[in-house]
Amino acid sequence: MVSPAVPLLLHQGRRHGNSESMSISPLAQPFPALPPVAGVRIGTATAGYKPWTRADVTLFEFAPGTAVAGVTTKSLCPSPEVELCRERLPGGRARALVVNAGNSNAFTGEAGRTAALGQSAGIALLLGCDQREILAASTGVIGVPLPVDKALAGAQAAHAALGRASFEDATRAIGTTDTFPKAAITYAMVGEHKVTLVGIIKGSGMIAPDMATMLGFIFTDALVSPAFLQEALERANVASFSCITVDGDTSTSDTVLAFATGVAGNPEITGWATPGADAFAAALADLCGQLARLVVRDGEGASKFITIDVTGADTDRAARTVAMSIANSPLVKTAIAGGDANWGRVVMAVGKAGERAERDLLAIRFGETLVAASGAVVPGYDEAPVAAHLAGQDVEISVDLGLGDGRARVWTCDLTHGYISINADYRS
Image 1 (cartoon, rainbow, N blue to C red):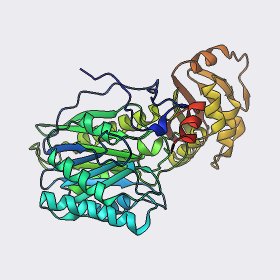
Image 2 (image 1 turned 30 degrees about the vertical axis):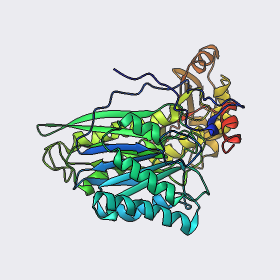
Image 3 (image 1 turned 45 degrees about the vertical axis):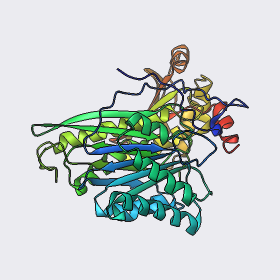
Image 4 (image 1 turned 60 degrees about the vertical axis):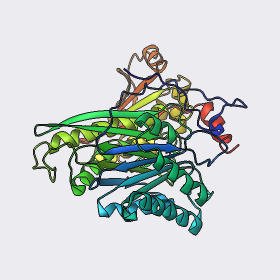
């Protein structure tokens, strides 16, 4: 059974006009039935970072010895929480993760770092562990220091509530402008043991991370070494979180963390030669792909989910650059929003990408329809099937450069008036 998709009703920054309510994305997916993951306890609480009554602090407690891996934003203006994760991830072990919503604590100088360190130190004291085993993430408005008193009180309340919250509770608590809670689940056979992988994610705008996306957290009961978990996550990231864009903007807080509690009883996965390592890595990649696409489906103001395939490039890297050029083009995105079969805008985006392209080798498809090839529109081109394809919620654009074997797939959404309304009104 799955829960119906319902609005998160997170904050008034994503209201439309003067309405206090939010519209669920038309591309929303139902929340899956998620089982508990052995070795993980969850508590949520209200710190009151904004004038609301919803939970805005989430604490995840992990069994001793839990392995951790992560990827963080490439922004040169990262939050103190991102810096804290970068400093502590090399240790490879985690006892807790704290997530604050409503305040990103980014660009807040020494006050922000002091708050982040203070909150993690308080949690370490509560759990009786080394504070270097505490990871943290925050999301919300940039430039407002995390209030230390609220952060500590919220963490203490979440600690007192450990074991009472579900993954769905946590997913709702970590959100900001999200209109529906986003999560996924996969399984893998490692030897004779079935292991579970659960992921939750928040993100809706400021999405073009080139590493991860907003805040995403993965939990598994598998026994995995920190080094292998890191390698598998980095590989999964390349084909998932690094292949999505909503608006071309990279957040200061983007973080994806994976936690492996190791209580499933499987032989420890230490390398690719370990039985079940390939199956685990494939399940992790699948989970990351599901989560990444859910973020695009909740893109601010989105009405269409767009898949862009580029083939025939010199390299895979070149193909991805071209694909992201198309995906980030406001002209392409607005044409699709309006159902305009303007394939010339795709040509434009290919040409400006900065990778090798030859006009007379280029071929473009919308859905199953070939619209242009060999430097011109195809003979007898009929726009009707393309217009019909664009009228649906799922749009596919394929480009073949005709140069080599490089290929890439990325996902984006259209650009509507809704995006402007949401972001022009974000702080009010």
